[in-house]
Amino acid sequence: MTNRECRACRTHDGHLVLDLGEQPACDYFPQCDVPGPDPVYPLQMWLCSSCGLAQLLIDPTIPSEPKGAEPAALVRQAQDAVNRVAAAGLLPDGARVAEYGSPHGGSWLGPLAERGLVPVSGLSQADVILDCFGMMHAADQGAALAERANRLAPGGILLMQYHSLETIVRLGQWNALRHGHYAYYSTTALTAMLAAAGLSPRTAWCFDLYGGTVLLAASRTAEPDDTVRSLFTDEARTGVRDPAVLGNLSHDVLTSAAELRNLLTRARDEGKSVLGYSAASRAVALLCAAGIDQDLLPAVADASPAKHGLRMPGTAIPVIDPAEMVAREPELVVLFVPDLMDEVRAAYPQIEAGGGRWVDTERLSGSLQQDPQPR
Image (cartoon, rainbow, N blue to C red; front, side, top):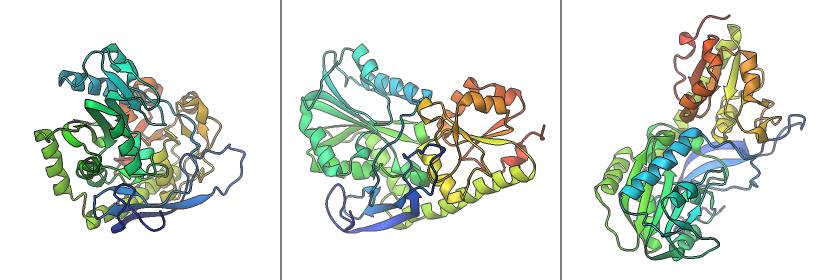
């Protein structure tokens, strides 16, 4: 995409709104004994002036991420979503369903089968087509959406779940940008993309996951309801199509990187023991932007056995088993995925029982002052 052609509408007019410089591929976790430096690649977000799609500008990386553990929050949200869609009468018993899932894992087919829906394979037509964080991994956005639309049976419904660009902008979630994630959807931009594929939004449901996640229902003959129109209004107010507004994410990079480095530096200087939790893709860009390595963060724990014995991309920080994290009795555990907070506190009560504390990376300011005294 060196000529800056939109991945959805193919136009060439747009703006570079976020540039994170040269970054390691956040899905490349080397063995701890593999010496660096790791390969780095440009990581940039581009905003199409025509359809409004925010997208990854170029991506020369090759996906190789070890499979992660599915968070309990994601499982709960999936069941909640299925219940809400069923309550709206959009999941008829016996309907054929096709799922485009995320390569990071997770599936809704179990809860859908419990409601009488029948999965279909290959490129068969379906009455319900579900895309749960799947299409964002397609380099050719226009072709990916066309494929889903072409599979939709007459009278069928397309369900698309996505981390809202409005949320990313409003909460300064700049590290949602990563290699392999080609699109960052606003409902406004997705509506334009759907129109090109002969579909239009019908209704939507909003969830707290990742700070703000949308499940949009679209079909061939539909008019946006009040929920969809409210999303349009919120997005216009936030400015999801304004390059200057999205450009403010660059300031958020500097702020959050400085806060993390200050926290870890002060913890080291005060003799506090610190570990991280969740070797997630969003942690990679934050660690690199803050210049954090093993001297400030000795290890990051993760529930996925596939990541144990590996290291965080671009650093020497090893990924360890949560049991080792508990055994080390850290005074601070920096949590890189805030949605996991309830889950990890319940799973590892020993941290707080021993006087330690979990620190949310989205709420770093003032974190150290609230810490317990060194043991």
